[in-house]
Length: 118
Image (cartoon, rainbow, N blue to C red; front, side, top):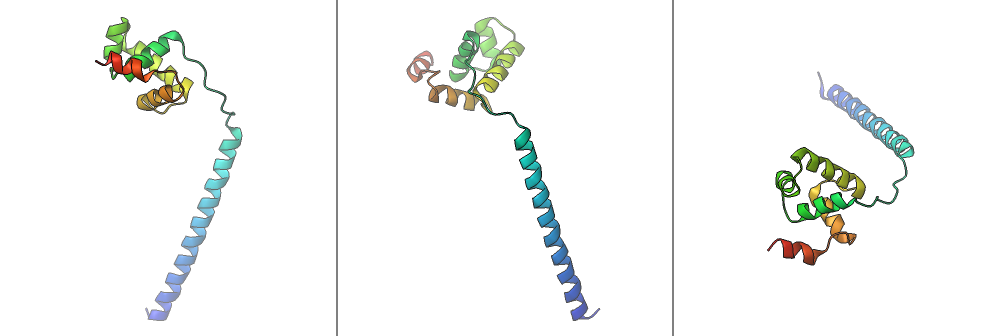
């Protein structure tokens, strides 16, 4: 195969690859728009129950689910359920994010947490 023919094949390949990428990006953009259109509006986060607040404070103290369960006399699975509810209520991604949001929103008091940790 001569160089001109190879160059032509490569050129066609690159053009099709570019076009394929454009189509894929367009489909992804349209899909994201459809998903966002179907998503419910984000309401204000709900208030935590007294038990959830208690669990969040202990999580902020650095306790594991097992340790929180022992301290509150509940099963570890119950603590995990409370933590899941806390994450949903605050819109947090994980326990650390929930604690951060707790401080930012004034739900947790830094002085009280640091005092309990002593």
